[in-house]
Image 1 (cartoon, rainbow, N blue to C red):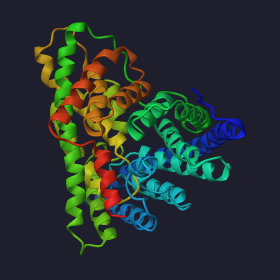
Image 2 (image 1 turned 120 degrees about the vertical axis):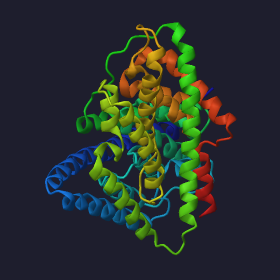
Image 3 (image 1 turned 180 degrees about the vertical axis):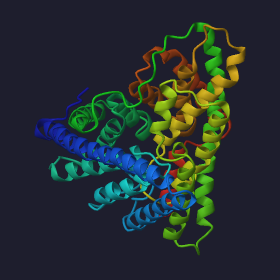
Image 4 (image 1 turned 45 degrees about the horizontal axis):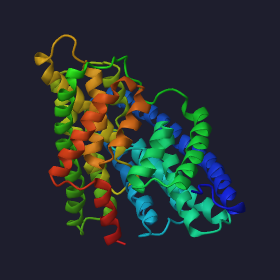
Length: 429
């Protein structure tokens, strides 16, 4: 079986993938760098306004409302710019849609930076995946490749490189392409994705660092008798994921039934609500990395705080997505999973013996299991979470929980969220 293509066209595709991967690393790494500094500015704003009393709390409300409105106004001018973008990448692979225009990349970058940086409960991975795919598409057009198939593969492969940069997870980017985007393993596509992810992650590291994105406190491999417990946690996480997918779609449909409300005004109202939550407690808003870091470091939240964060972020994520700004679903899902895993441990701990796994292990497993319940890509969830946390000792619990989560969500009749979002996108274009 030939995997490298024939003649110059075969080699040209890999050169294009490498060069495009460098561009994805610069763009995606720059996007993450900007978001990190936006988080610092947001924290400084909250510190400053917190000293002003109740009047000061109105400033984050106004800032987030303005950010959401500006990002929405910018994104609505370019087809496929609002939302995650992953559904568009999948539609291009299935030849149901054409790649985005040249304006997609700058609009996704600026709009995503404004929306996520202002505190909306959105993830960075959607915009970076979409920008990576756009770069891959441009490389395919300019690389004088022999056929449309290679150009389509570059579009998909560099989308995977974008995910790799978003979470510093090169294997996660590869598995994402094969499991979620294409549902197939083609040797040539695998090689193109490997080239793109390798160069993208290498180039991005000077901008984002080389460490783990969400390092987990040290955990040991749980004893085998705990696997049924993780299976049970996976069942509950799958049910939670199915409910979250339903809420994402239901919120979008509810907004569709408000045609008289201008899109930008709707985004501003959503931003104001999220800004009010942020003024109350910053952990309730944003992509969720700070919350996940705290939970994975073993930092304790009380049972009441876990329930509050879980309930608020469960509703705020779909609401933020309905603002029609650039932003993804993955990062908020991981935070939601860490909350659910931590809460599961709190509820189960009175029944567990002293040698049972601790809260950190449950948080890590919860991240992958809730992700699986929503996206229905268990291998992607396992690999992503393992690369992000470094908790390779939890491989068996991860496998058990993600299996249970996928089966539970399927039995509940829940469709994978990106299948639903892709169908909505196609119906509206």
